[in-house]
Length: 117
Image (cartoon, one colour):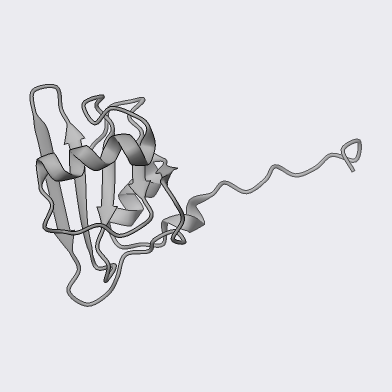
């Protein structure tokens, strides 16, 4: 499990990228996709075309860290293919890394009072 500091955002690129890219190649994709700096302490996730492989890029203050995970028997749950990406909560990130359906972690709406109906 990867622990994130409070305030750390998790950016997920929704379109697949080449998994041959390393530190510099993935860092170069961060600015055009998310309009943020790759050295700001946030986590940037990239997916493979097959959907069973991901790479995460993170600046820890002293250098870039690159995390990779490949599933042998299933695929990660990804958002629809759109331009740019989405921002995940740390809880959704933890579920995604464990290959669980992170989309089901949305808090239900609070019940409506009679005055709101």
